[in-house]
Length: 278
Image (cartoon, rainbow, N blue to C red; front, top):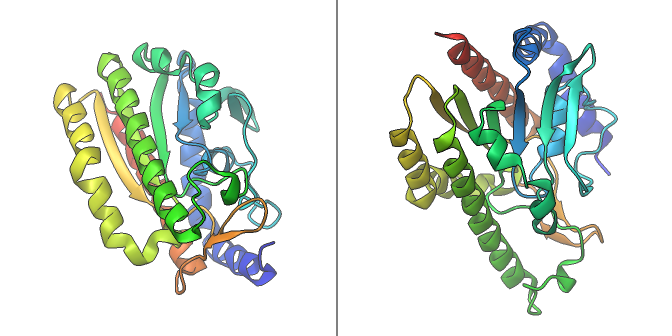
């Protein structure tokens, strides 16, 4: 359970900046509504347990920092859609990210991207820190040592993230409409001490190679990509059975977290302005 002082600090930060946040949210919601003849949505996609549902609820205005508990992982069984409270036409689509649900939940996603049914794709990654839905001791990668398991689990998560990016890039190449890709690397509160390595991973190497090939294949007037390192919530890396795999980083506080949330809105606002240019 979250420390109530933590929630109070978040609430205080939000209250102090309520006018600024309100303006950004208003602009974002107006953009989500789109034009009367444009019914395209925004796709939020990524591996299971990276924060897709939390982000969708945040962007749709359905997230309450004081009462919600995003650190409690709940698997999504099917494609979720979120609408703005006063505009049911506007859609944020969130397909389930678990491996065993992708065959059915993602069946049409890549085809829809290629067909131009989304005007933006938010890809979530987490440097391999994908929430578990079981004890790590029952996971196939467990060999008896918790530290070794975590290393193997993170490596598998990074490989999965790259595989998803490759699939998305293939679909995006075929899209003829204006489209943006926004990669959001969550769980900064867990990997913050290794930030230099995280920046290197997503800015160079195989991940960057995929992005560079995609950018080279697209007209800059019809495609734009952005990358953000962020934390949607501060939490320890625990299993559902309260097994602690990694404690959140000492020194990473709510001010640091909320700066990344503010930056999230700023990048989305920049994408909105780019999208509205001729």
